[in-house]
Amino acid sequence: MNPVGFLVDPMTYGFMQRGLIAALLVGVVCAVMGTFVVLKGLAFIGDAVSHAAFPGLVIAFIVGAPLYIGGAIAAVATALAIGIVSRRGRLRFDTAVGVLFAGTFAFGVMLFSTIKGYVTDLLGYLLGNVLGISVGDLVQVAFLGAIVLMIVLAVRKELLFATFDPLGAAASGLPVAGLEYLLLALLGVTIVVSIQAVGIIMVVAMLVTPAATAQLLVVRFGRMMAVAVALAAGSAVVGLYLSFYLTLASGASIVLVETLLFAVALILGPKTGLLSRAVQGAATAA
Amino acid sequence: MANDLTLEDRAATATAATNAVNRAVPAAAGEAAAVVLDGVSAGYGRRTALADVSLSIAPGSLLAVIGPNGAGKSTFLKLIAGLMRPSSGRITVLGGAPGSAASSIAYLPQAEAVDWEFPVTVREVVTMGRYAHLGFWHAPGREDRDLVAAALETVGMADAGERQIGALSGGQRRRVFLARAIAADPELYLLDEPVTGVDARTQEDLMDVLEAEARSGKTVIATTHDLICAAQRFHQAALLNGRLVAHGSADLVLDRRLLSETYGGHVLVLPGDGEGLVIDDAHHHDEAPKGERHYHDGAGS
Image 1 (tube, rainbow over the protein chains, first blue to last red):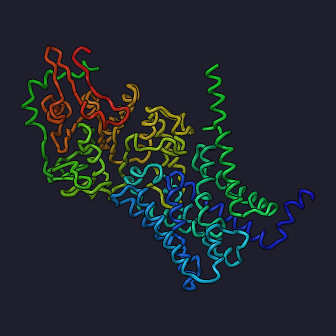
Image 2: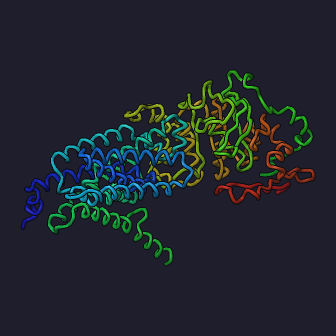
């Protein structure tokens, strides 16, 4: 097979075209949000919110409502609830999130177990299947993703200040609490949009891994976001082709490519590279 | 260093100083005051951090806020910044409620409160001082860039604009944060430990900048653990120990009796001709932030 054919042939299939567009959209939106998730230390919250979306999806399925709507309501509500707990609660924050996380997911599983018959749709949400995305779903992903990106870019510098120095930002008059709730709500929407592509269990990787890799490579906020986006887009493409040719699960392939890039950056990266450290260590010892 | 802080006159005038010191200024006295606290108490949960503080700070003040750890120094700044609400009492900042003139306030957090691994450059940090003056969507313009460059110049960091903040020394980091405050062009500076953990040269430079700002009519309120710096470089001092022990001219307030009252009897004045000052803050060491200084300087050391 020639190289052009290698790249073009899969795209003759409609499901691969839709899958690639969806994976790119999800990858980019997740990478942009993920930059804030990583810098604010919200990775665990991302995981909690994605699991909390599950009961929303199940309830929507049971009542025959659009699944996205159910998932989005549950995810955004959970994200905001976590925000409130973190500002006012007396429990340790990770404890509260841990309780909420497992409890909501268990509720979803319980509801799920009451459904009789055909539930492949719902199982798909656990592991994701970007190749199974319909045109209608793709339009929803594009629409919601565009809204998230527009809002984030509109308040980008304020979010940066509030993330870096919440007290200084609040004292200068920025609505820091409002920005935090906005970020959490957008995180909820992002997660629901991404669930179809990579599933509830792996969404957190889409959020965290490209941004974490980028943080190993660059020292500027704007560049970190740009590099995260590039890594996410590249992983989406490579992951999907791997999935196509090796008949692997699409979501897992994308996440594994991202993880591999993270490992490479960790070992070879200029800042924290284990290799450059080892070399330096050897040079010092010599 | 300790020799510079002589308390010769103060010992003789200790009683007079106590009387002269402004223990409680009625709010009405400072119509044009930059900051007025009237019977202010505040705390975290059930713990009271500050009780019944009343004072008035005039525009152009260069005020050192002094006291042991847990005395409420940071709380004092946060109340004025509008970051915390008092449980009782009234606060007026630049003629309004705290927070109402936020874009005229620059707040500098303690160094420990900042994530130094954060991927931002020096210039990006200083530019944040301009954000409150810009709307959403709006990128900093030429005027903002000029103010940022001027602020970096003022603190002697003009050449460091493109460096990542984590690559800076402790003193350089404080310079950068002060530059951010200057770039905001505020009326009121609220600085939490601006000169803690920096070398002597940086301390002098930063105090020169703050003095110039105060002279131009800006109000500067800074917490410090450095009594020598407070005595030499600040114009006024407020002594806190869960309450306001004293407030007034720095050379009157930094009196051994008042310091002893502030630090709970742990200020020892060594006998002899050249009087020295010993603050034994040992019982606070376990909760002391990194880089904090403790004075055990005696006469002639």
